[in-house]
Each structure stands twice: as C-alpha cells, then as structure tokens.
Length: 258
Image (tube, rainbow, N blue to C red):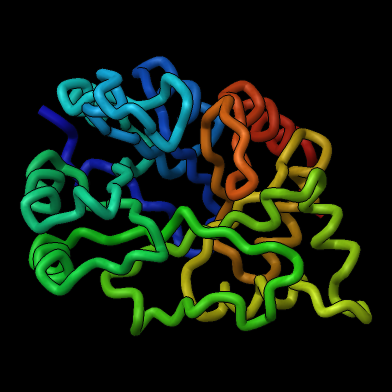
C-alpha cells in the first residue's frame, strides 16, 4: 500500500525547499531524496504512457501509468509526494482517489482554478494544491500575475517559471535588479509575489550558479526551487535531465552559504 501523508516529513518552517516534477522510478526517487529534494512529483497519465494520446504535452518517456503509481508513492520516504493533474481530469472523484492512495498534494495548471465541487473535495480531504505550469517573461508588468491566496483556493504553493525562454534567465533577472530604466520584471517583483503566496521558482540552475540563486531567493522569502525533468525544451519551461539536478544540488552541498 502507498505510504500515507502522515509518514512523510513536511519541510521545516523557513526551510528553503527543492521540488522535482515528473519522477519515474524507485531508483530515481532514492537519488533525488539523497540530494535533499523535499517534494517529488509524478505525471500519471495512462493515455500518454500507453501512447493513446496522439499529442501529449511532453514529448518524452516521463509519463507513468496509474498502475505504477502506488509502487512509486510507497518508495517516497523523506520527501512529500504530489501528482500532476490536467484540467480535464481534475474532478472530485480524482481528488478522492488520490487522497485514498495517500496523496494530499496535487499540482494543477494555474490558469485553470478548480471548480467549486473540486474545492469542496480538497477541503474535505485536506488536499492542498500547487498552482503551477505558469511562467513570466521579462517584459511582463510588475503586476504580472494575480497570486492572491483568496483567489487560489486550497493553495499550498504557487510555482512560477521565471524567464524560461531566456538563455540565461538568472543573469537577466540579476542584471536588471533592483533598478533599471527598462520596465522589466526584477527580483523585487519576485519578492512581492513571495510575500503574498508560498512561492517556488524555476530558473536555469546549474552547479556554477546554484549557491547564488539559493542565497538570493531564500533572502527574499521564496519557498524553494522547482525543477521539471524532461529532455523536451519549451519556451514556457525550464527543463532538466535528472543528472543536471543532482549535480547542482550536490554542488550546493559543497558550496558554503554566503
């Protein structure tokens, strides 16, 4: 049987966390937990897994089947598991099914807030939502997203891809922060979102910049860094191979905090 939520350790208060989407195997879960990943996500989609869907969003092998999900959930020991849900599948019955399997954290598309029956099911079963699959580009206005908790029911975290179409998003974010004549998104704007909602941020993290990114984001109240595993490159996502994530988090362990 899958491990229930109560056996998972929630990240400590004020602890800068790491979140990884789309794990696929028990071995991968063990590796991710060994480098300090706090949240491990699964993309359970039978149509994409069995190649029934002619046009899945991700052109890769990282979908898992519903039949494989219980074994993977049971393998998560230290981290907290969550499962991705598409707008089409997010119904009260799915919330009930996930809660019964020990999953009390679902990731949904931020642009499609859940309908009232789904909200009621989440509230009744203590299921929190990660509002993800959202991104910001440098030219967006400072009020680029409505991220108020009141309008995001059952919100546990908001997950934002920062400048995913830029070759070096982190350099760009730093270069124009905190003051620049151009009207672009800055670190101060990220700080503003993090003050309103618990915020995960995705950037072009690598072993050379991970310490600076973690130090900067933790100082402005960001909850943590988010990584999406996939070889597929999209302008709306920062994507990583597993080894890239592992190398960055191992480099972070070796680099002293500033």
